[in-house]
Picture 1 (cartoon, rainbow, N blue to C red):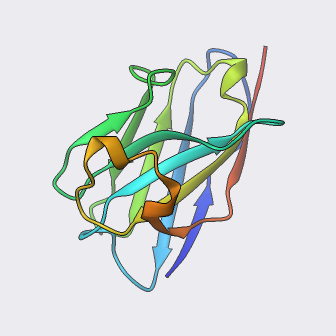
Picture 2: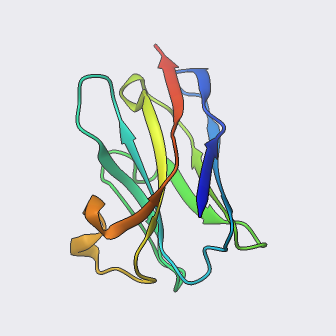
Amino acid sequence: VQLQASGGGLVQAGGSLRLSCAASGRTFSTRAVGWFRQAPGKEREFVAISRSGGSTFYALPVKGRFTISRGNAGNTVYLQMNSLKSEDTAVYYCAVSTVANPILSRVRQEDDYEYWGKGTLVTVSS
């Protein structure tokens, strides 16, 4: 499975971007898919997850501003990012979980994600 994240770019604070994560070789229908990000000089952190059963979960810094969703074809996951802030600047990665519906206490565990995309850079200017 290969994942391709796209949609990053430069945006002013308060603006919006939509990231896409496309899979080749399979669909996401039976797996949870998450987004992570890594800001300059910081460790990679969890952003959001779409579980196979339909539920979603967000990290507190992005809750209410970001929305994760799945495409109808089952091989694309999106991250709609609104009201962007300078602290959202990071490389964003999508990742496919090893399970369909991970428990919430595990959604941040990177070891539980089997496939990772290369990342797309989001830069928010203040």
